[in-house]
Length: 373
Ligand code: GLU
Image 1 (spheres, protein in one colour):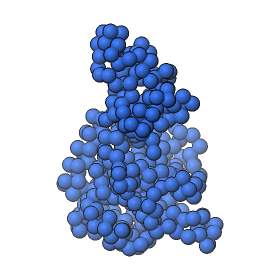
Image 2: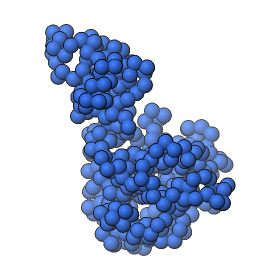
Image 3: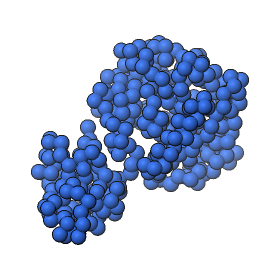
Image 4: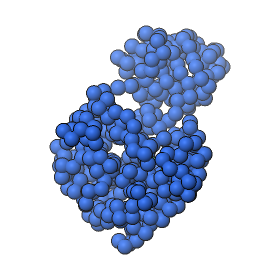
């Protein structure tokens, strides 16, 4: 299973956590050096690599006299502003001996939620890969506000897999994959070598909180794995401090935990609607509409909508909820909130008479709609 999956891999997104590259005395240049050599080995074997590196906040916070996590967002942003250039410098120096160039890409959720900017970012990424440059991606911490934050680089890296059209996501962590209980407190904890499907039980096992330096714990890693596997990409969570970890992983050695891709995965566009685009509103629909969407694979029509929340334009993403307000799908609205206020509950054949124009019969077309699994 592992070897079969790995034999088809060419482009890899590698996420490196702060817990891996940041030690007691700051950035751990030895680890960064070892990982860079590993990546160069992969590149020389014909793989393409996109690196997602955390560590900006951890690297910069000492200069502000902060011990532990920065207590406020402005302090975190200031720490990132100090640390990001140092982080890039460390990667740049580490890749120099093998003659590779690195390039910094800083992103916010907004950059990827806007389809045009998403495609632009993709073009940049593809050009860098074509020229053999190693893109080093991080969240643009210094400018983000809560609504446009990825929040943690685990989730960012999962979205990058679709941006980069990658075949594999490797999350380098300070734990060697998913265990049935906490390996730091329970020596008898058992590691899962392969996870076929990320069930609720698996999600529960991942528990909460992470390390002091990074943002995510195991739970954000599982979330990321879920997102990537839904896109049809295998994900490996592995201890990033083991010697030669990356070549060993791609050669099929049983390190860490491999999460298998979902067989009937989403298209890139549906994945983007589902995970990258932020919802701006809510449509509450009756039972008939819910059934049509969920069981019959139909589009959402105005007749089934009985309430609307939020403020959104045509082209924005909205949550589609049942009579109890529980979300069961998400999609792109073909009409704005103002337009929908006038046509909800009405038959599609009445739209033109009410508005004086019509974009189509559907409020959310099936092609722009993703049902929650
Ligand atoms: N963007 C943050 C940094 O570079 C890391 C976020 C995370 O730990 O996931 O410090």
